[in-house]
Image (cartoon, rainbow, N blue to C red; front, top):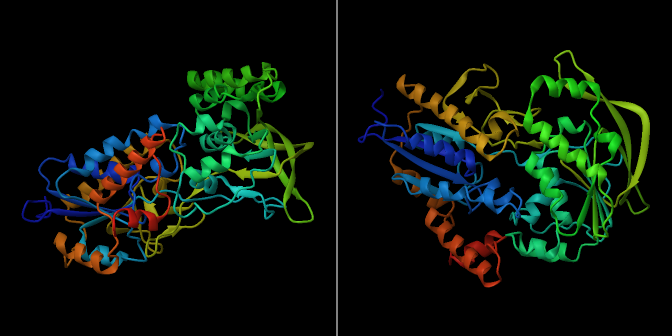
Length: 466
């Protein structure tokens, strides 16, 4: 074991990104016996928890309870939170190398994949990521506007995020008022004119990326009828064979629920939600003002690739649906970090199983690592990030044993704290977050809601007198 990691010379680790992966990495570091660790967790926002706070749907409060685990991690000796500190603005990679033995980048996937069809630039076509961030009160997106006067909306994509968007559009004001949705979003959605929502998937029901609870939940909304189309949800022979071979009971149950909606009849509820399969958008049509008015769809059939996966292939059958608002939810992408090697095509940090690699030599950069979606791409749920973070930390510990780590010239905790105070005097500590958290909870309790979020950094600073 290297001298680093002893009481006399603690292992100093910087984690960039205070979402689940960052906290899970810190947790695994602290579980190591015989190693003294000090963790500084950075986030460009004043608030921690990443997508748990700003991505998980507001009507999924139970999922957000994982923050109790993160709270316990934050109480460990040697843990510090530097919120409202941005890599590339307030601190550089060179600064981190100068103050830490190891660095982990866990910034997640913050943007989305584009939809490359004619008319994609029309007004009224938005990334689902922006809508999600807007209704969750993300400071970067709270001033956006979505035209909820439209009666018909399309959500392109068939994953959990697409389901979240569709569900939030279809919830009643009373249902939304029981959540921690941003207050401005609650107000806007309370006056929404949306009457029909179409969720569009390019493959069949057996390949749907959403989870079984997500599709089941659609049928439990107070004032929305849910429908599927019988011929679209009937399994083709390839899907039947694949499902039989896998014997995946979860997918079988999911398909059963999807198919059950084909039997639904209108009950007079205010909204209708159609979950469609085996169709892809090929063009958006607009009016003279450049606003989207309709979408052309092509019907698909599945074929088996040489690798054995089932992929969609366009047929000659097409249709046009009227829609005045379109959200695309076809995949998240990571955003490059200044000074960190990045694969633009894949939207991930260049890495070898978690070790950041040099763009030219492909060799690992000593002391630099990554975990979570920015490491592997947007796959899995919140809990999936725990084993991923553990795997990266295990690499770090193996490298530490061989002496492969950074050699900071200013490893003392006070050195970087002084630097941050100079560069960003309005940084947030974890204690600051706890005060803000208590204020949000109290404001929520006053109006019978789980919490009422601060949605601008200026308001957060003002609330704490910073």
